[in-house]
Amino acid sequence: GMMALGGRGKYRLVASVLLMALLIGPVIRGLNVTWLAPSGAIPDPLSLPPWWLAKEIVCRFLIEFDALAFGCLSAVVLARRRETLERIFHARTWLIVLVAAALIAIPQILTRLLLDQTITLQLGNSMQALGFSILLLHSVLMPEWSFYRLLNWPFVRWIGVLSYSLYIWQQLFWGAPGIPGLKHIWWLGLWAIPLFTVAAASYYGLERPLLKLRSRYRKI
Image 1 (cartoon, rainbow, N blue to C red):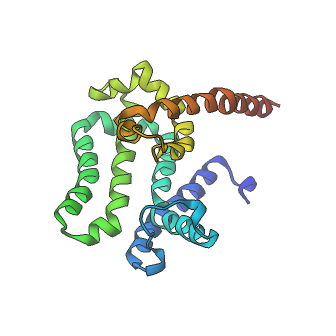
Image 2: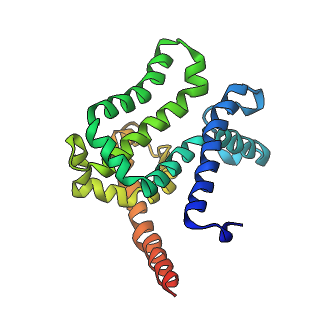
């Protein structure tokens, strides 16, 4: 089991599982099986049978789950090969940024032009996830480079602190409330007020205390 593996063995096992996920993701998208195709925007959940929602969740996960694997693999590579990454990023900064930007832009451009659907449907998610992962690693290792400095602004850093809470609670504010006259201005930025209020309350009232509790028991 995992307990019998040394530190290096655990990293290799995790990396192998993540690489498998990266390879399986495009294959699943390439199957083009009817039941795997999500039905678009999910309507009011209260009006739908439980099996429909379960099917939507499973389908969306199978189609997009490899994006999570890219993020996890980036963390593993950063932990095990930080010095190597720093050397490469410093030696080929602009080339790496341009490659990452191309990986993100090409599927979007092809989709707009209605060209090669093989790339956009089967490999598009993987290409964009890889591009964003490269930029994320680049920003971590070279925080003072170019526009990455904007990410160190206090307000932007605070958004990063709240990011998990924002992710959890944003779904509540997708639709404008049914108040006359409010719907037209909701998407002009009014939605941000309740979202950030709830996210901040969740972080400072729940997430941060639980993280402190976890740290305390880890020491024990």
